[in-house]
Length: 344
Image (cartoon, rainbow, N blue to C red):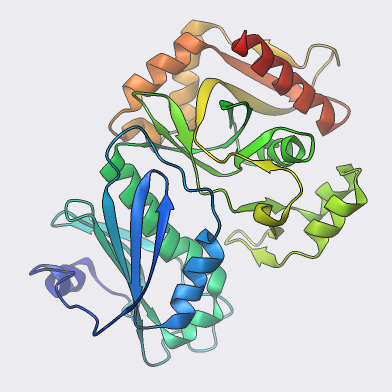
């Protein structure tokens, strides 16, 4: 049974967060520049929070840190029958509340104005920790951070060095994750491989630095046996598309993660095309083409507050295209050279 937007609004319209748990369990995390308070009536739900956000670098941004609250409520019963995965999330909005709805007892309701979110999950949803964590809990964290801190949410990766970073953008499958992973393994600071949030005033990039998702065929490009073992020993998750990937915890890796937000020096569009000249993998994109390309690549972010300021600053910094070399290590070298030039 799906939860209609009308019934959801009626259930939440008076005050969606007025019902308080009696002496709730709680954990507190510094994430994406905000101070998140997670409360729950369920230890397994808080265990998912700890798995996702425990020991994540506590990034802070140069503004007052807002207090953000997420209640995680486990309800009894089975609502998913014998499904091999939960139904897709349906997005709804109304009455200044954003909804991500799986069914009548598995959903997230977010009120940016109140700086609060409510995640409701049935007992059998615990059998799908990946979907519960990414599609409900993480959605609440990301929306609250973006809306309450004025961050621009980007689908992309980011690596850097000495506090300076480069955004890695491009189509799915172009190689952003592979490049970010090899950057991690070859001395660059790893910030994120999928979701990056930028404060447009300062151009500081932050993220939840916890996992990198790697296809099995990417293992052949990793030279270090210890790194291959780290990935092979990781759990396998299955995307909605059916693609399976290793979910490798970068908190357990031997590489460096970005312990504080990175100041962006520019962006690179990662291309799946092979470079004709192996010595010229990185090529600048003309300034008059950058804005249009950014708008097309980041359709969701382009509709968010702060986008025009962010885009203008990125155009002034310069954006490049990176084509593939014979080995991902060559692409890492190209990014390192770009950081060196920008740092000078």
